[in-house]
Image 1 (spheres, rainbow, N blue to C red):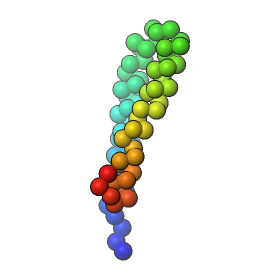
Image 2 (cartoon, helix red, strand yellow):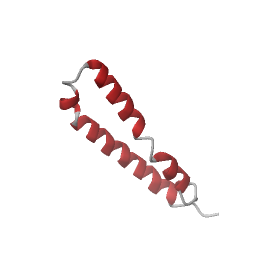
Image 3 (tube, rainbow, N blue to C red):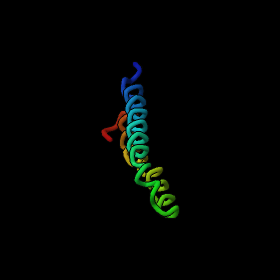
Length: 67
C-alpha cells in the first residue's frame, strides 16, 4: 500500500490554519484589550474553540474520505 499524500498535505494545512487564526486573533488584541475583562474572557474562549470547527472535515479528508 502506497503512502497517501493527503496526510502530509493535511498537516501543513492544519498548521497554516492555526497560524492564520492566531494572527487574526492577535491582530484584534488591541481592540479586545479595551473591553471589560469578562468580555475578553468570553472572546478568547470562543476564539480558542472556533478554530477547531474546520478540523473534523479536514481530518476525515486526510484519512481518505470525502470530508
